[in-house]
Amino acid sequence: MLHIPALRLGKPYTSLNKTQLVHHVTGETIAEVSQVNGSQIVRDISQMEDARNELQAIPMAKLMHMVKEAGRIFATDSLPCGDQMQSFDDYIRNLSSTTGSPMVFCKRNAGKVEYVLRNIDTIIAGLTLG
Image (cartoon, rainbow, N blue to C red; front, side):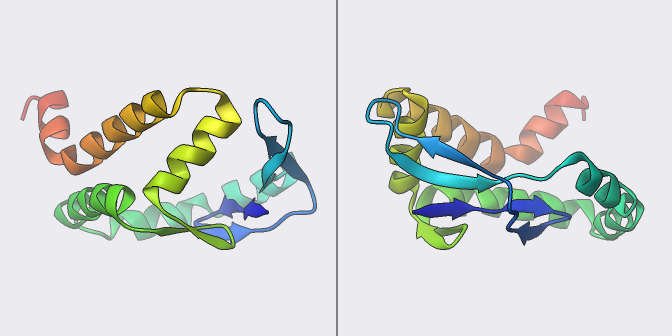
């Protein structure tokens, strides 16, 4: 079964507290997702300034390039998802099976995510009038 860890300051975290994602028709467990509690969030918030400084050290042009590359990778490559690799088609199948949304809608919405990521520079320019 697929396990999706929580991300704490960008690092995977497997917790004892997990939520199961089940198939919308069969009730079969598709994946479990690690959860974090309030005290863990408070602890992470105390480290946000360091994370913010690290992010601000990356030039904006490089961040834009990273986001555009993420869009390409999202749609074309297999990516680690917890303890397994997941292709774009696997993602669509899992999303559809756990939400009940038809695969065609899931694929269409994932295409919108890809579009935004690949065109982030144009979108930001439009939103900031520049």
